[in-house]
Length: 141
Image 1 (cartoon, rainbow, N blue to C red):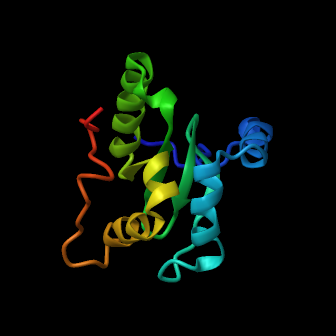
Image 2: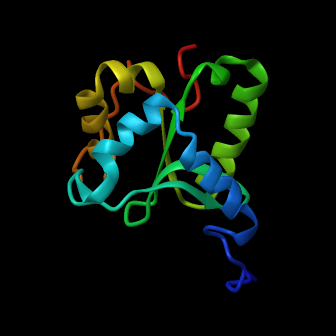
């Protein structure tokens, strides 16, 4: 039986770390946030540096159960790829959709990135993901 009293979102123990991450965003995270904040993308509410369980995700849309991770150079490392894979499996097991985007795609083609995000909203008839931007599992690195 699942204990529904356990807090899953924004645990207090992670509050300071979330705040630190928000105050030290990467250039790609800051760029993407300018388009996601204040319900600018199809009137969807996004949160940044939101914790789910013991994980802090870059962006989270509660009504879509959509997690967006912005991946930079550290995600090229084998250890980090393995850690990301485990983390993604846990979050998918909690019924979240995970979309991984590369820094360079956000910085060089943000409009296409926004289309990819919008195409992953549940009310879309056929969610499409551009393989050049993201692939769950094998990211083509």
